[in-house]
Image (tube, rainbow, N blue to C red; front, side):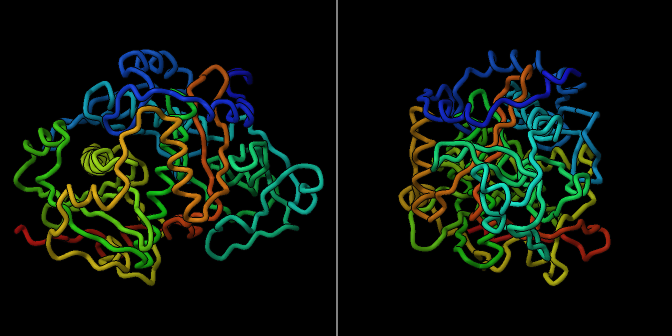
Length: 432
């Protein structure tokens, strides 16, 4: 593969791209700026360039025929030992949306790999005299690590939304998998796919990356007991495709929805869907600026989780990553928060208590998400441009150094799930 194909576009490309006003064309499972069929044709032509060899419909493996697809990219940069998966799953209200989703997931995983990475090696104390660089101690680091201003690190450029210019950030926080020891530098920054997203445009990709970071922030607050949970009435779901899918659900499974509320502010819609059968438990999360989209993302992710598990297509399935040995596995599903014992929250009441906007263009949505984050004090938003020349599908990695992440991201090593007590248990609330 040519060097030109795998080189990245400059970070400063984002200054113009994020200032655009792009109309929302459809909003199933998230606001999008392009027609699905046209965009699918475009990325299907690109798929072989990033090593995608197969796309399969795995919907029928599960009791509910909700569209779930799986793409295969066997030629990984490293291996599953470093957290990579050769299979990428995607879901959607239609076959087209599910195919797009799984292909884009694989394209993201290709673009975030350190193939011809843009790197500088220096300590922050040295680099700051020549370039704008974010202090390493501003980033949340993994447990038992503390990298400071004098440590030798690998750096890569990103776009600062606040400063509207290029700044340097630790490469370990951008690329995945990134092995600092290959460069004889310190390790300890949180590495992975959190904040990684793709889209038909840079605006679309960045908006979805921000929602993922906010979703994980809510999870971190849940683990610490720093928010309230309420159970929703799932029979009030309005999305026709979800209602149709759940109407065909096996009687062996029930679906439960939970809404999350941070104290002292107007929340974004943040929903968790739990698909339960006996001791089997599948979970999905959804965060958006619109209640319907948050619910759709959570439920469809739970359905995707089940189909993926049945297909056996992820190399990390037996890994319970980064679990704290001091936490009882039975408590991990809701962290330190109290699980509701009955349904109390109607959808209309949920809409009134949170932001519930229907955006006409993605520029408007991006500004809204920025303003929500800035109100919380998280105004240092950094966007790394991982888009590859020749692939030309926008891929970004968004970093918000001050925004907390779940504990599983902070632990330095994997723990084997089989060595621990059973992870899944039954979480039922009253059916009244």
